[in-house]
Amino acid sequence: AQSVAQPEDQVNVAEGNPLTVKCTYSVSGNPYLFWYVQYPNRGLQFLLKYITGDNLVKGSYGFEAEFNKSQTSFHLKKPSALVSDSALYFCAVRDGGNAGNMLTFGGGTRLMVKP
Amino acid sequence: GAGVSQTPSNKVTEKGKYVELRCDPISGHTALYWYRQSLGQGPEFLIYFQGTGAADDSGLPNDRFFAVRPEGSVSTLKIQRTERGDSAVYLCASSSLAGNTGELFFGEGSRLTVL
Image 1 (cartoon, rainbow over the protein chains, first blue to last red):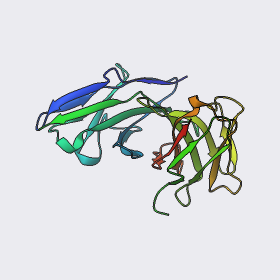
Image 2 (image 1 turned 90 degrees about the vertical axis):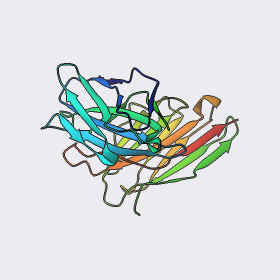
Image 3 (image 1 turned 180 degrees about the vertical axis):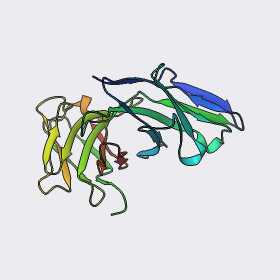
Image 4 (image 1 turned 30 degrees about the vertical axis):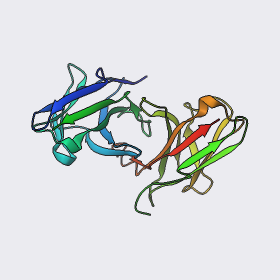
């Protein structure tokens, strides 16, 4: 079984400040980790993924995420938040050792960036 | 097409009716996934196709739900005897399944409302 936990329903940050959206995961094999963003009435958009290699992954719109195997975490970060970053963010995991395995999503974290 | 296309974007039906939701994946993507997203929650896996066959249908909630992909491209999710609890956004995604590392590309969803 695999699962994802996003402990914060909402994260509030002022524009220009750094932001972090937390994610922890559980998977039996090698974790493949993903972040998606969802704007109102839109589908999910891929931001970044960790498969292997460097623990710090850089993605779209200036976002990055750090894979921490010992803490089973994959927190999403951005050095300077923009109001336009306000959206719903989902972390997801799949078991890399299971070909075709489905992606399991967390419950989502709403990011609110205030001017 | 350029992205994953889902129709209808909105469907309102009465309890007990039959509903079909269509997904047209990105051309060339062999893997196709259906997810269901209820309000305030993350997407929940329903079924996964690799080509024409359902490789994993463990997420289908009961036998009222069925999906097909007869030619390995377009897929239809079918819901019989709809119930109010089926109201949700049904998301379709496709992937090139490049060694299981490929991200999923999502459509904008079909919002189903059962009255």
